[in-house]
Picture 1 (cartoon, one colour):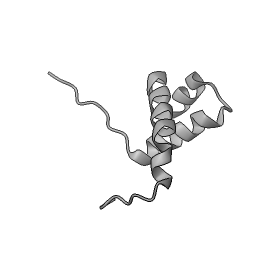
Picture 2 (cartoon, one colour):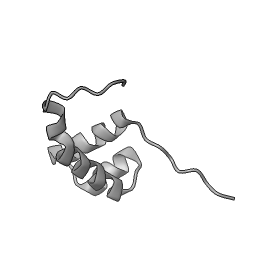
Picture 3 (cartoon, helix red, strand yellow):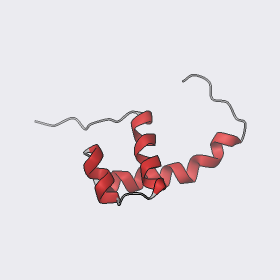
Picture 4 (cartoon, one colour):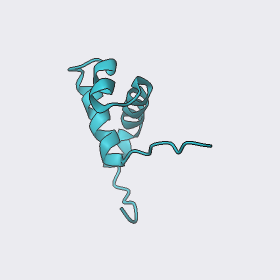
Length: 64
């Protein structure tokens, strides 16, 4: 019997990534606070930093 993976919303991911960027807490502390694996914190932080320039390029996405 397979177990379905938990899917997180974009707003939750951004909240975690911003907390990681602030640097007030360690990755482990952030992961414990949000009840996720520390690897996810690092991955979402890296994704935010790599894609942050796309927010200001003026390209509008259709939809949400």
